[in-house]
Image (cartoon, rainbow, N blue to C red; front, side, top):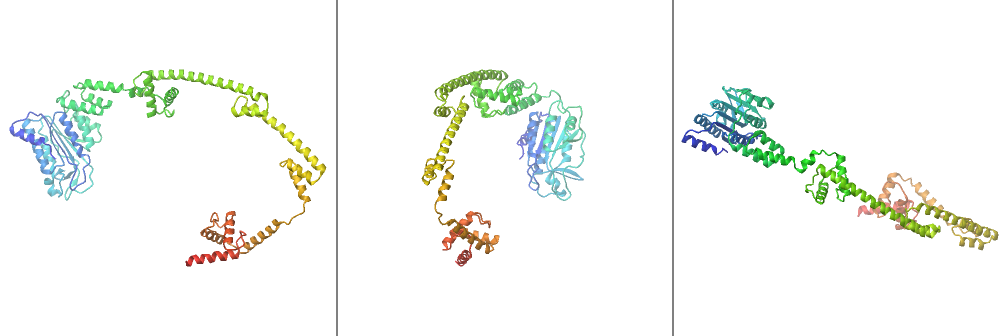
Length: 547
């Protein structure tokens, strides 16, 4: 796309001489048909704005072909010839290529590359240098290179050559797009020479005429109000101290300088900046949060971090104090907040002390009515109401003493009853003792005596133990290995019995599952594996397999 100004420039050129003194050509080719994107070349639109702000007549194009670039260069040549331009700036960005015979900026649509087609696919730099040298005072050519990593065809090398044949009076500055823009901004500041700009930016290199003392734009140069207005609009859009300082640095006496200084004052006196300049430490911020909490404002924690909850708390406190509700504190407000918190803390302490005294009075009065008498019901009644009361420890000690007395009396009665039973030494006497003292100290002895006098019934436990021992012996005779035990557990689980963990270890849960399976198969439910059970499990397994 070519800037519409080209047509206007040509039309005016046909009509007669122009009065423009400074002329620029800016071409940025970023999107290529046969090459990768030239990253950063699209930023050259910012270069157009910079030059226009400084009063340059700018011819520009973006992603243009070789013929279009040559038309733009022709328009530049015409402008210089017609106006006798004092200063000329040329900015070229995109993919460059070179050979022994010259260097070119490649056109964006270029597809058929190579040295033989270079003049048809790109803009040769030698005519650009020659035309720029027609400037009366100074000419600077900015070449914004992008990293290369591809072929430009037979006979062409990527990038610019190490040196160019630069005419007298022309300075050439190379660098990547960001560095080029930074250098241009610095050079277009009135009173600035080119050499210091190149020297201060290590990402720029210069060759040709690089003046060290002669400024490119004279000190006091003022192209008009347009640059001032645009710079101030940018500062207003950003609305930061840095933006307004940048404007004042460029236009210290500009038509918007007073407004910029007023905006700076506003920003510097903004509530958040006022608080920021206090340099509050983490502990000081915690103290502020504690003060707000004491006054009933929830800061969602006392951590020294002023998040949304703390800001809301500050805003509410400011509203209650009649201050502007900014959510940010001044030094005086911090002192006022601390004083209010101290008064409220003293008030809370007095209220808590009065409440404690009232509670203590009630505690003592209730003790006088209940526990002071020393009886168990009164002591328990006191402890139910005041488990941590003034006399709670004393009440528990007295209850324990009463309990010990009661236990001693109970033991004495138990001992006397046992003595009477032993003296009588009859079944009815021992039965009477057990009835009166079922949990007595001598109850086991009484039951043992009665049991010794009764005839001995058969011992089913012995018979049961013998059966268990036989079943255990039969299981051991099978010599079940751990994998076999695991298989039995898995089979039991498959049949719906829960043997517990499937680990090949027969625990209580496994024994219960074995007994349940034995019942289901009509076997003795001993809980121990028998040959019959193994046969039943295997038979059932085969049946499942064929089913």
